[in-house]
Amino acid sequence: MIDLMKEKPSHFAAYTANYFFIFGALAILNPFFPLVLQNKGLNPSQIGFLMGGYELFSIFGLLILGRVYDKFRSPRRTIAIISLVCISLVFISVETNQILLLIPATLGVGLFVKSPASLVDAMYGQTMGNPKESYGKARQSGSLGFALILGAVHLTGLVSGERPPTVFAGYAVLLAVSVLITRFLPTENLHSRPEDTHLPFVITLKSFPSIYWVGLGIAFLNALGMSGHYTFFSLLLKNRFHTPDIGGFWAVGPIFEVPLFFFSGYLLKKFSLKRLWLIGLTAGIIRMQVYSLASSLAPLYYVQIFHSLSFGINHLCMVTLINHVTSPGRRGVAMSLYTAVGMGTPLFLGGMLGGVILKYGDFPLLYQIFSLFPFLGAGINLLFLKGHREITS
Image 1 (cartoon, rainbow, N blue to C red):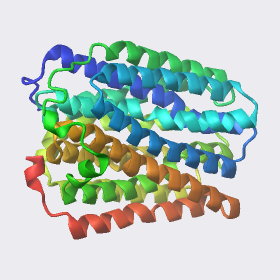
Image 2: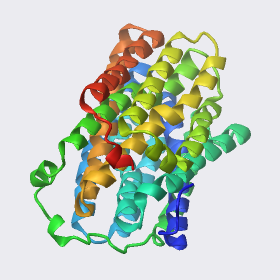
Image 3: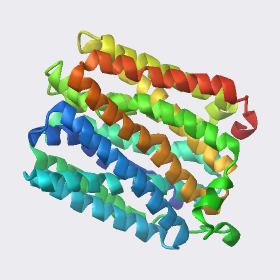
């Protein structure tokens, strides 16, 4: 059981609620945004290229905004402003039918959309008393929010990619609630080491130990495989299996993230970082293979159970690594770099690669290729990670 005695209940509750609504908002945007683009007349290959550009812009956004976060002493205001900009850009994207406006608006969403969750992660590690033990239990509310919102969408049909305004409305309401909650996040201990702040970017990067870069490489390859899910899974369901049940499929995976994050403290003590990460990478390989080989919808439902392993373990291991090996004053850059290079760059490359594959091939080929990347990540894990039990104990 995770010991929360070191955490102030009101602070823990604020983070828990904030994660719930941020990821609830992403539950509306992530599955349905590619379908919004298809509703605008783009084909799956074109959507792959545009979503690749979306992810490229998210890389720059995370790096720039992570640096801004570390430099300025108004983290709550920074997160709130970024969230409001996201709402505005999503509105433009879903309302316009002009391709010359749709493309820059979509890229603009990519520039800002991932920073709120990433910066809340960084802020948690800086302000809470025992983040290594308590982070997973707070973060599970994000997975719960993602699953419950998608479950509600599945049952009510209130949000649909064929009705773009409903995508905006759902996303905007949930993210606006998270903005209101942001003002209750604690600011104690932020930038508690002045000597760590305002350093040149390159010097900050050089201060990160080698294990950070090894972990970042593993996270990169894992996420490159996962890009087959994030960018193309909704398109697979709609175009190959002709099912309207998009939200139902997306809701299954995050449900199983909840126990993973709840017992994260136990798992991190029980297993070394190397072994835990290897489990997650193996789950990613199996998941992409099932996407490739499935001839009916049932296996696609069942394999969503692996989302808690293929995504959840990867994220848990990397956040734990960052909180252990980087100093608080540099954690905004460390966390944003992980989100940009370990999550955003793979989705950019995966979108571009998937666009090419779908132009000349089909979905089974796409997922066979994407299963190779977590396999390579497992190789790096075995070669370069030792037990590193000191990080998880």
